[in-house]
Length: 282
Image (cartoon, rainbow, N blue to C red; front, side):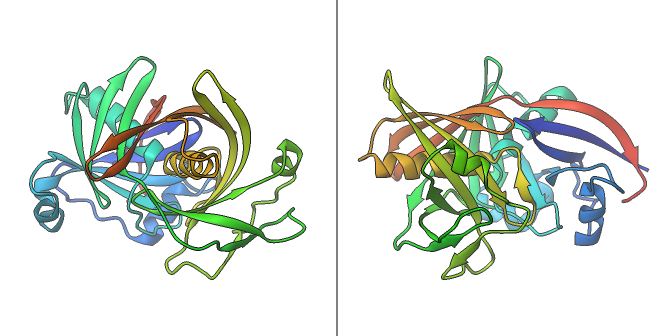
């Protein structure tokens, strides 16, 4: 039996394992079984907390700057580069296990080094430099009568953001099947569908639904919230620098910080461990 924790951030939920020495190496089939909501524990993905020193290929790439590495897998077992909600839940796990000082935490991910800090009500994470991509891919999704143009956004993992007309159109979406993106993105892509709510008091506001590659529609997606905020900010002419993002699972905030390597995104929101147990799947 292997001990696990279950955590969530705005409804984006994860099975978490603490494996400091890198001794657990779940297969894609085991990850999918753990994340199965009827026959397993149920989650949008699996997070394994491993000391970066136990993963030499990543330790070299990260330059030894992170004691802990967040090994993230999608619900279907595929490997993902980053997870914005997951990194906050990861920090909460390390805090509760007494394994790290989360006032200022450096985390290794497949997207590079990420910085996390504890704030009132949760955590804030620097998700790195965000890049807008060229072109206007066409996106077809259930419930949309015609294809819509999208905006490529790189948050360490790939996204396409689509603007919708109103809340009724957002509610009418059927995201049981993955939206079709043309031209297709090699390796798949997360698709965010957003409705701008306006700008007030220097803060922009959007509502969003998301289909995550390898997981399906989720109640929240942290990197997706960042992508949606940056795309909407781009459409609005490059302002403001603070955004409120409402997802089915709650609310997160995105703040833009100007850095020498570009515009960074700080994602702030709640994170909690909801229960612990043991599993025989691994």
